[in-house]
Amino acid sequence: MSDRFEWDDTNSSGIWWSTNVSIRDECILLKEDTQCEDCDIVELLRSIAKDIEEKGL
Image: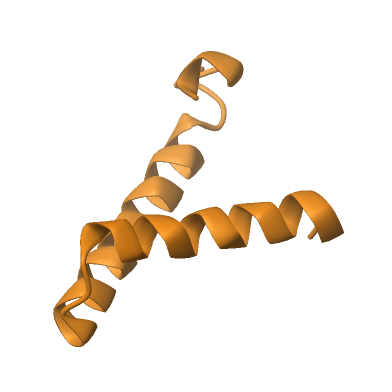
């Protein structure tokens, strides 16, 4: 995925990095709270991505 984005440290990579870390942190908390499996979180993230692709933001 990172090959599709320009990772210019002088512009927006900090935003991409912090967004990635925030999403990852929330997934860790979700796993701790629900005791779900990693595959369940992956399925959730894929369903969110599919919804965005189909409907847009």
